[in-house]
Length: 587
Image (cartoon, rainbow, N blue to C red; front, side):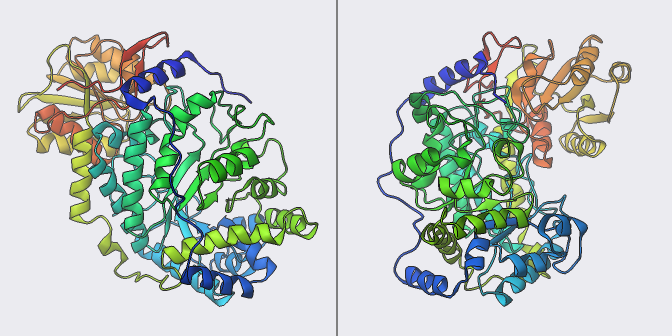
């Protein structure tokens, strides 16, 4: 399945280049995140000498285990790993890591997560002495994993809208510290994809923006914050997933950039991550013909992972695949061959194979028949062990479940999140000089968003001296009727791609037809403004976390200074031009 390369991509690329991102990629002067030296190298040699072949193969896998406790049987464990519990997965398969999700029932509350992590580590230590690296897709913003009281950060594109390295570093520090407190050690973050395709269905607001130099600068700061908190970062998705209209969860995107475009657009953030000493780089399930014309995705491509990332860019840290359960990596090979092809390409860690028994069996067979040498196996195990040593996992892997939550969602972290969200809020249009609103103005709040989010916005507006009238889940007719009784209608939209859902547009249109001034806010991608018709004013919040909604209220009331600027260009609705450039933002 290929990705249509729309004209939006080229226009956005031009806009990014005009902001100073047109220089060719500079190779790193030195390789960072190397597989250990000195005492670490000696310890790794000692560990390797004591490991069985099964243990070495297991270290290459990061598994999903189902259940809230390590010893709770779960049918999904049985079907996907051949054993019943998380502890048995660790003991039987000697996996190098686990990844937690809400849907796998791992993330219920902080004390439970900490207890699960401790017990899983006990299983690892009892069955070979190699601690697990426990991970999560902890990007914050629209992709988050830890439950409350984890700090509700505003997300990547909000950071891009601030342009602040200090904000990016603090955000990374918060995520890293909170993960370590709960017994996790690896954030599959930050997203460093340069989002130049407005129709991108999978990256969008998860990206820092469309300017490669800005993305590189902010991503490096995030990595510094994450790893400064002793939590491994993983820059993703190599060599760049920002210019596709296909979701690699569902298909196999094709990126048809020239090598010059890769050097000026996609690769600079990864070079910056390498220079910052990032512990891991995650691969993308995308085809890049200019780098490898065989048709295999980057995850399985030797020219991309070894030729480009290892040899040309000089990266020596861990290469981790994106999920091996995604359709983009399963189109050409069976589940037993995918991890073999990834290892031969140069990957070290195999993330989330759909059937762990089949995946491990495939690698075992490849080692037995000489296709994967034990020397090649040892290269990856060395990198994984070096990462674990670097993060102190051989010194201390247990946390205190009773006090873990005390270090999470601290008042200071919440204040930092709010400051980032405040600085990100972007006034895109205000032809009617509608903002700020006078204190005491009555405001209808409706549109996209759950009743809970509408209630958060209601409380925030009232705290800023406005009279809020909430109407969650309103039809166009209900919204139109309610607008007759207020001074201003505030309407939220939220789109994951370029086109705003028609049902959301219908509510905005109905409100605009009443004659009541309409203030529009996009709660996800900022592109909605070109699809909704004429409104009095339009803001981009870049997320729907509580801090984003509080920032909207502060901006409407004039209590938050409007500093944010667009980190991505906004095309016209028909895709034939540019409505708003990178850097646009009214004050």
